[in-house]
Length: 135
Image 1: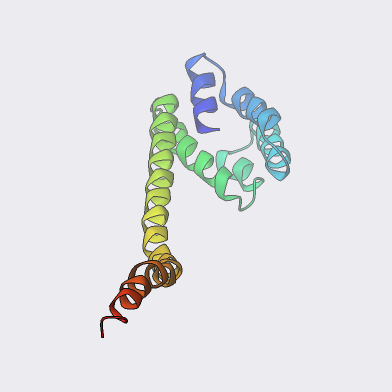
Image 2: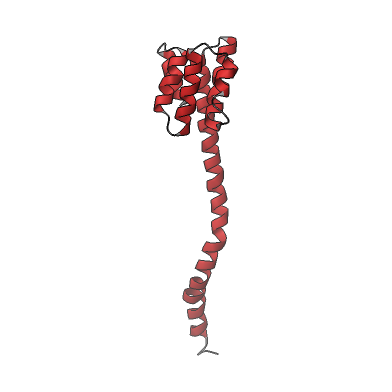
């Protein structure tokens, strides 16, 4: 969603129109919340009041945070949105890598317990059986 907003800003779309278009692309409850924000911004409602209509949605909070800085300072919002989207992707990748590393350590015990009986049955028992007649 952040990249989509950034692309719309680069194309010259106004903030209320971009939020309205983003609402059309959103699904579920986020769609309704974004439509309320877009309508409030279109009517000229103050920034904080318009985004208060979105409620406490984590995904919309990221969008609001990125847009707030751009709206308050006049900084190019597209660059901020791209940077925030990249940071979010990086965080998700790091979380996936961390989970994968933790999975490797969790699988050692079950795999060891499964491999140990077969090692004993196929490796140690035949050697012991072959040594029994000599004793």
